[in-house]
Length: 68
Image 1 (cartoon, rainbow, N blue to C red):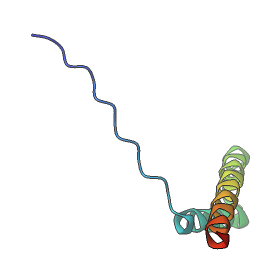
Image 2: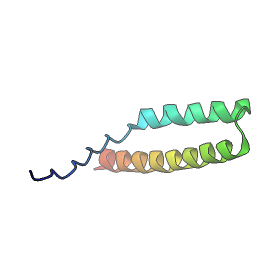
Image 3: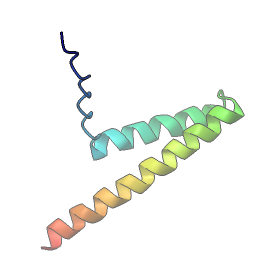
Image 4: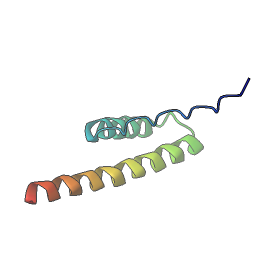
């Protein structure tokens, strides 16, 4: 029998702007509570900065669409 090639998993849909904002709020709350260790706090901070960057990109694209 011939082996079937493994199927690649379909890419998960990209989170919406609102989902990103909600995640960012959760990260801020975790960091403000101060209950995460340094390594975890740095990881959360990096995740948050990436969320902010992507939200800005989305807002810019929304603004361009409105202005057209």
